[in-house]
Length: 456
Image 1: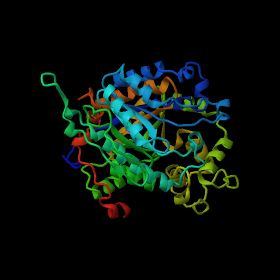
Image 2 (image 1 turned 135 degrees about the vertical axis):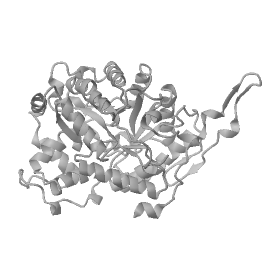
Image 3 (image 1 turned 90 degrees about the vertical axis):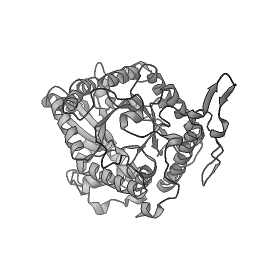
Image 4 (image 1 turned 45 degrees about the vertical axis):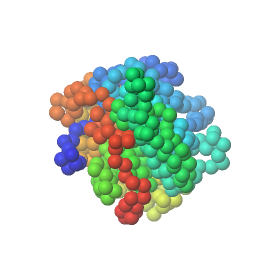
């Protein structure tokens, strides 16, 4: 069935990456900040998300910590794979998506870790592909490669990982006790990859799961990120502060995927940074409370590190002129974030003050909503029905209000409207997302195919 004829349904995930401790939120009684460095809180959140019927939980990652940041804010991140493996033991349906960087790992190690997670969860794993912008000194490197090189390396990295996942299909296991034959060795093949960055023999030493291979997510919407997503991703997790940005991204990925001969484009699942309470007034009050002590100096430092220029000479209550911003292709760190903030200045005409307080310091440029459950459900439905996105990943602003309101009030409204299923149909993450089987049975996009179409 083609994308044009496949019935659409909304997809929903939950970020369990502690964004709800931002600003003053961690200081509130009952924030559970003391539980961030253990498993029980995340097991509880995943069980609640599964009870609500969400498609997956999503765990971000980072490979460093800034000690000065810890003076006033929680920081650090536990390794996603062990957390998701623990969650798999107390859930039976919800997908388990974890972030892992291509910058500081090897394809074989990563393929093995997520392949193992896919097996122990019985086909519920997903890998969110990122390239790192910091942390190089923790891995004996002097500096991060330029943006384009990071993505060249990432493209080959993903190719190798997918080939490894396909190298030992579970169907090769015969398990014939009578004849003493465990597996059909002819179906378990080396990948013998020799590329610009990696040489990997294979095969992987773990077989595939019931879903064939973990689902591949990709984070980032720069030009290089879009190329990577169009070729390899099943879904993209992106920050889209407006419906127009989301729609442009989705349309672009559909066009790129079609040019590559893919039968379907990646699902576009932007972050939904939500402050939800019983009424809009209560939600607004909650937002003001937790963001009251945001420091504009912190915003200046983040923008200046990203763009490589000083923002202190611009008027706070006017947009930064587009001609004053550097060319995005020359930005060393996140070109996705740089382009997002450029659009807010140039196209949305937001003032420097608003960009800092509403987007840089809050939600990292994700779509921010503040309102009652019925309002949030309507906003989510509106974007989905307008084909601006395929669903959202909830990034709760506050614990427990944002979680509970979303599970108990927003999702039921979406179910009543027929946009979100009332029960799980299948048990794998690919089932939930309407994706075909992965791995050896999938038809990969040939490496190097339609390169000219990708560049156009």
